[in-house]
Length: 178
Image (tube, rainbow, N blue to C red; front, top):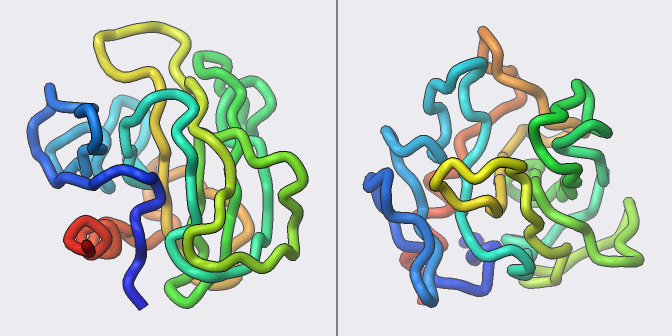
């Protein structure tokens, strides 16, 4: 089954580092874009794909699955703490392609671990993650993909976490689905 876009917006692939959010679309970053999967950053390698979008954008399940965890993702509550970012959460959903991590969101009230989802069910809303405006969007959906059985979003410091997969091909499929 093909993924659908996790956002109710058109996904448009781009390598342009200066192009972020259009009126009705979300740019799908590909390397060397700083929001792309596997891009080397100052203190780590990027574990997911950042889909820049306005704060409050609804986030939906890309495929059917089960909510397997809801965890603090960024900010002082996260492990390890990241006080340079606002507190955000992540919803982990296990489906046919593995465990999808929907990070930098506020989950829907009442969403629970063990809940069965269908493709397109709403999981929450994008919230502002960045505390300082550096000329980039302050809100985005951070999307990761891990092997089945994963229950945490691991940091990629030196070695790539063994559970971590690249979600980009699935997002490209979603971008071409009409």
